Length: 447
Image (cartoon, rainbow, N blue to C red; front, side, top):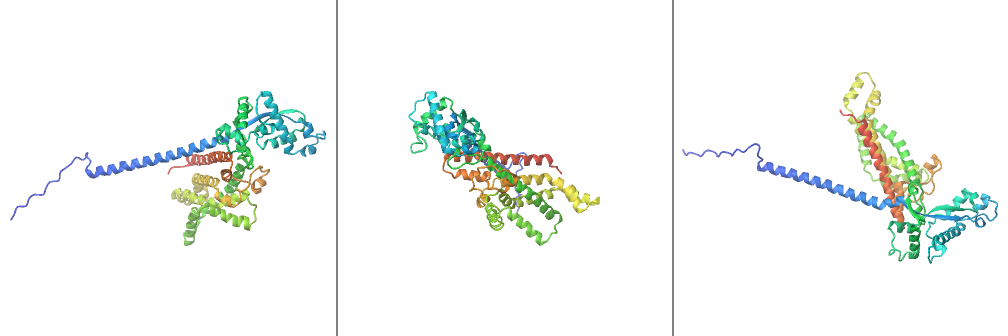
């Protein structure tokens, strides 16, 4: 019988010293943390680049160049009859006011001692094409000032404004027929004399859109009213319908194949591209129901269809988060099913419901594709609505549609305004999301 050797003893290591497998596991975990940190840094870097790009390109839209001129309201040109009757003054078109602007420029240049080869008409071309209409509107509102010299502040045209903002240079105007080097020399002299100044442009925030010939006069105000009207329609329709559907599906509906089909379709609708809802709105609300095209009411109906799945899903999640013991306790003390839901469950789920609703509204506020198909992008919102009915039924635009419209126009001033409109839209979205977070933190309960 041979003597077999005893089995080799396994070397005992300290519990405080990591073995090879533990070291590899720790190394993998450290690399994973590093990858996560790098991903966060890259994301923050991209966010910073995006914010800096938007701010640097869009802040110029909030400043505008103005020209201060003293215009003599010559009675022989504006009121040939001398009666000061408004109807007679209205007969003078904007073309009749153009010579007054040219004469005002000529007088200003002479008073300042500016030597320029420009004729009065070429001087007046530095003004926006909106200047003559502005002057005419003032005269119609104050006919008693005819025959006097009145100081006005007119918009400079987009080329002058771009020159003062650095968007237009002397090299870039070589092939530009809208402005010349002599006019830029004249602009420099007027800036030095304080005639042309650059100030905050409130009309960009509260004003209306303008035609392609007047980019310096374009504003977001009317489009903001259009977006507000649409959001009111979405809120009034989607909140009660979405909450009612959620309560029924979560609390009262029997668990059958039919309710399963409904739930699956609601989840699928939340993932449907928004342009599909635009096609649906075009076919149903405009072609079949003959509602007015480009109206905020139609836009609100389309966005309601798009927002409902989001509100239903978030509301059901909030209802599920309420502990079943709340329902059982209410039923145990004699409350009916409806009383337990509306008196106990719904108030506790309200923060989540409000948060989901605000997020759904914020998503709808930034949508552009559905509005393209119902015509809101092809309408120039030049006049604010005069009533609530007008705000809902009159053709209008919306903020994202207005930004899209500006971005595709040829003049660089519109492109600058598109970036400025993005800043306003982001301010609205950030405000709405902040309100959603505050509501959740304010009313949320821990179980």
